[in-house]
Amino acid sequence: MLICISSKGESMAKDVEAFKGIRVYTGNGLYVGKVDNVALDLPNRRVRGLLLTGTNPNLVEGGRSILVPYRWISAVGDIILLNFFPQKVRGQSGEAEESN
Image (cartoon, rainbow, N blue to C red):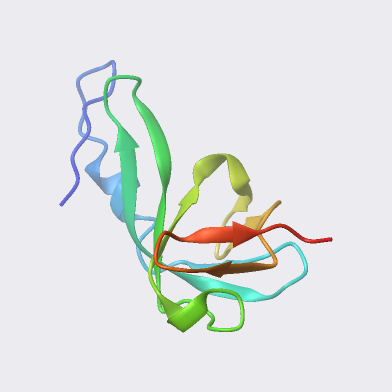
């Protein structure tokens, strides 16, 4: 379980846990994956990104788990929409190919 303490000293674990299981889509409606965990930047008290599992093998080589930077997110609700996602994520290092 991830726990982060807010400036008011309250546990934000419930907020972080709320992301788990949410399905993530590109702005074009393509399924990317499902949120498995949240990466936190504790010194700066910010969300670094979302760890996605069960990813779409058409977008992510081998359907591997990936970390999506939080800045790529445009909307959060019943689903998460991304304002950016590479055309294809491939390779062992998670290198991304930009859309042409």
